[in-house]
Image (cartoon, rainbow, N blue to C red; front, side):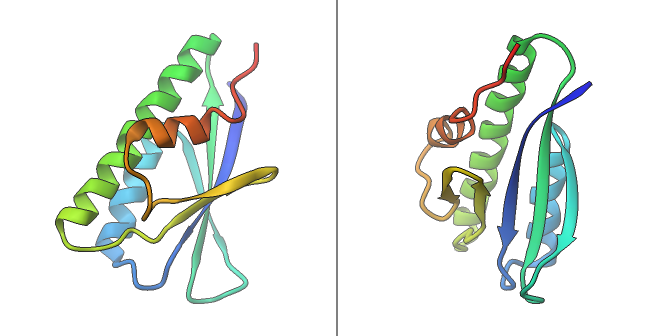
Length: 118
């Protein structure tokens, strides 16, 4: 299994423990997730790695599933009356502010800016 992509997710301090764990649990269904200390002790930085187990199509399926999971989490947060202020970032790419996303396609488009390779 090879590492395909990674991105950093910065979680704000006002994100409750249950909401944070829900997001990390969802991410772990499709990726390897590592928590790292942030320079700002009030933030949690998470590095998420999408791994490629087989063909590129498998990786694209994982990315599509991941986009669906992330957008589902955002919708669940909004139904609770919360703004999911977490931000995803990756070198050479504009960050993705989860509070502003309007569709899973938007998440998938962001993930695919660095598509899987053969």
